[in-house]
Length: 434
Ligand code: C2O
Ligand code: CU
Image (cartoon, rainbow, N blue to C red; front, side):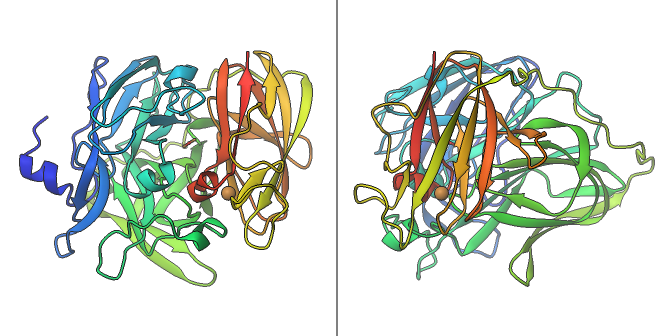
């Protein structure tokens, strides 16, 4: 892999500039976070204030096959601490990248070797988990794809990472991550949306797998895709038993959706606002596929996660805080069960393999995307059936949602809101599985 020194310093022009990793073996990679500036689009300005992995925002695409060993050295090129979290991957606890609970913070100039087998195929992502509100907001995230042993046949497998960034008056990244009103409300919403595509064009009639990832720190994307006819085949990396209808899409921070469909016209990414639509990116058509595959969209190969057993305990997680709500201790904006920040004792204690129900209550005025580390869970729907596996669930203001989780991964795991300004300001707790 050759990256010119110039490119290292100045960063990417648009989308991913780094080649895919090989899936043939289990290659070693280095991820080196460091300050950088970016230039997205030929006519746009170079923007300073970013942090990139290996000189790129987003970081390089890591692509493996199910069962492979991930082998990545984190080399800290920043003046702050560094940690990497493999979002959605069922990692061993000491590989989870969470300070206090599972790992020491890697100091400037230091390194840490992440090594573990990848148990599940799916669309995942990696991101900083040290001061993640600021470090992810400045660009420290990238895609992690684990291919099925027997993947569905498609003409193109395309990653689309969505993120938004806030710029300051001078057109540079706004590097003030301390604005107090961001914390108590919806968080730091950017004024610049980017869809980072691993490929910009397809042929008309091509069968395309689209892997959508929301890497924004706080923004929920409401997305309509134009020009592609197909189905949702996976949510948060986990295959659906039967592919479901495509529209409309809602992606809370950290959530993923996999789609397989046929490119009928240019594929457009349209964000829905209250009563407007804005196209933010597109995949153009170049030529026509002479022999398009018109067979039905197949379901992805099944996952091998354990089925929930008898529910042994039910725990309530009460969200509190935000503007106008001070029903919790301390000076932070947000809290779970009256406590802001990590409590000394775990919110839940589970014996390995235990199935538990968590009741997520959101009486606050804002939505929260609740993420469980090291596990996937299912929602208990209104009629008592179980929804698809997820690792992050969006709970809207006023809602109560119930999830059921098989706690079979030993260790101490974070449970937090993935609106990263909320978790930075208190909305985090943890569970222990032993
Ligand atoms: Cu995507 Cu605690 O992480
Ligand atoms: Cu939140």
